Length: 271
Length: 271
View 1 (spheres, each protein chain N blue to C red):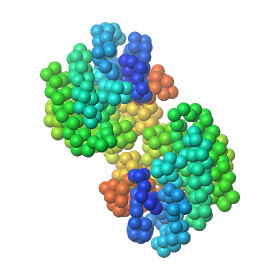
View 2 (spheres, rainbow over the protein chains, first blue to last red; view 1 turned 180 degrees about the vertical axis):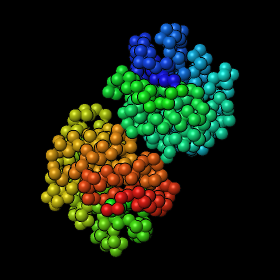
View 3 (cartoon, each protein chain N blue to C red; view 1 turned 120 degrees about the vertical axis):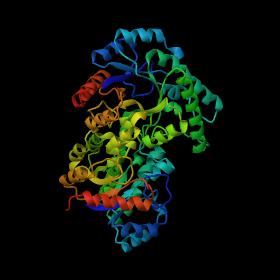
View 4 (cartoon, rainbow over the protein chains, first blue to last red; view 1 turned 135 degrees about the horizontal axis):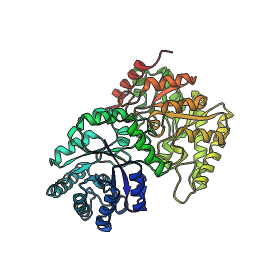
């Protein structure tokens, strides 16, 4: 397995972005801990100097396997399922804006909280239709550049749309685009999946990206998830991608990043 | 182990109250499924006919091991930590109102969401002080009648006050009343506890009540929690109380209630 870790490129409210701020120093720290990649959480690509980012990550020998987009929801309220069509349009445009960066880095674009929730006054069926339309349009645009989109099933407390892997697989059917798949996250799966390993097997080739955090959202090894079994199951699906740490910076970011990769290396099967 | 299940005595928004409405029919159904007790979720004891309730539960041979109080928060906004002293006072009075019912049934009074959250503009230290004061006052009043109070650590998404068992144990220290203890809930522990069994052992004699729901809040057996290990550990603490099902009514209340007790009986060590 190749390990990466989430890094926010600007101050974010989202607590689970393990490293925040001080970009260059953080990239060096991440590389020095043995991570081979860094997952970038970017609110708006227009506000990020992609050339500099590319230069910095390359100088640290860090790949960028995925770009997170959820800050656009958390900080601007953009979503695919807002009753206001202008907001939906802006959300779609924002995701399209990520395609250029995704191309440069060879990264998958993550569809997390930007999918939105079922807002008051909106029928769930309507929200799902908007979601499918938006994902179809974004996948089509990304497909022209061979870029893939990965939707993350997120636990019930954070969204009312697509909590479980099963719902994610049904969504994939509806969107019907080969470059649209899933991002599985062990923290969310601990709450939503009756059998985490079975859900990984069910997802199979639809797994485009993979997040690890322990049951308490701390670094792997700090909770009660069985990462040996989880990663072994992930391997059996033929998943060729990255295992990316998205966990709380507790007790502090550096300790969490260090302890997380140490635990995963100890328990993972040698490739 | 003796098994009970949560029953709401009036329509409630709280989804995890497994049976709702149709009191008499529900009590009979619960008894017929093999439960020996029913945990009553009561918003306001003044609105409940305790004599009738006593008669009905007795006629079904059902004990009432615990009274849940969280609806007063969910439906009226009462809490121990509201910045408005009048609201705090009403919350304290509401808990005191439960003492009479608790006496009749020999039930523990549950302190769940009525403890409140850290509201905007309130310092966490201040909220904790209000919480300690309220719990001390309620425990003192209940103690005069040999009634016990059990605070439930609840996961981070539902409250900002007392998420983990460790925080609960520290609160017990501060309240300093022998009749104030903990209610452990397996659904919340799955999210908050690094090691569920270790947290049960750490709680020891402070466990006054115990809730079971599986990792996905469905009935035990529908998720990935190891109830064999959990209940065995609970037994080793010498816990003499009830194991009470508080889970979602899925796929429907009757199926969940039936499947839950069936699973627990299969895996639990004979007493």
